[in-house]
Picture 1 (spheres, rainbow, N blue to C red):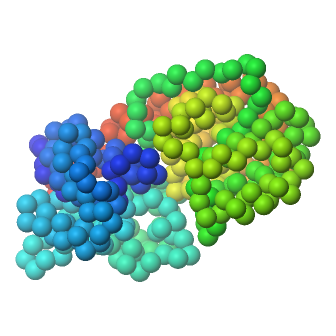
Picture 2: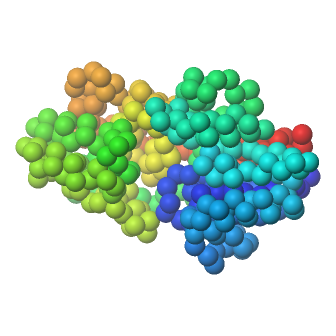
Picture 3: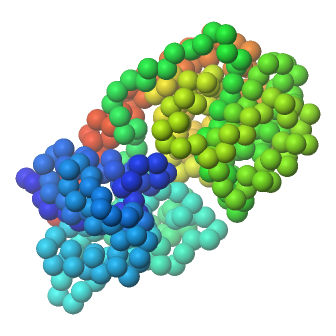
Length: 354
């Protein structure tokens, strides 16, 4: 049975991080299943369309976004929000109950700065879609029991295989790709830079490629300048969406030994490109990356563990290839867009039927 939904999203534009990707995948899955969808976005500027349908873009006007959600409640019986922020605009009108589902992603629902209004809209949702078991466990520690929560792993937006080709003449390179925020410096940039001198001592031509911008970039540059391996580290800054594909082709290994990932879409993108992954044992990276099979999950509290695993991969092309191919196979089985639809649609359709 087809149903009518309203999607309240942060953004549907390309190149706007993980939450934007989740919104696009959710919308596309609903369209593919034949459901109808009104789409309202907070940050986007109009005119905008998605999948040939008009999007109401409110240009970061929170009042306009909330008003559009309330108007949509007069037409649409069901709501889906891509995160807790937009869900605060959900209409609660006398005599007009509109059930809603909400995605939760990571530290916004378990971190030290958990907001009371975020917790309220999550606990009040009729369905909580959770990107990982790790996020669910930590969200329930922070907010209490969420009996309406269902884990739904994410995926890449594509089903298509990567066309990445390995250049045998290129130096072995480790890529980290992600925002570098001063207030949330948990993704592993500093740890990689700290390890790099010992890595280069073992693999002299190894390079570290750092892609991403943010408020912490200047501080990271200062750390790199003080490193004896600074000449082997390339700080690339913000990478436009259209140029990211080239980075995957330059890299031999993807490493983001983070302490705060709720899922880590970039890990599965690395797997799609056939790269071995270094994640950590401290967050949901260990749920996505299989230690010893598709890469390594390091213990950042164990001195030398990250360095040893980087050297293992950079010094051994055969290991990189075997782990990269295992990662590609894991992506094929679990993290294509079609696999996401198979997980997501039964959950959202069961919610709609109640």
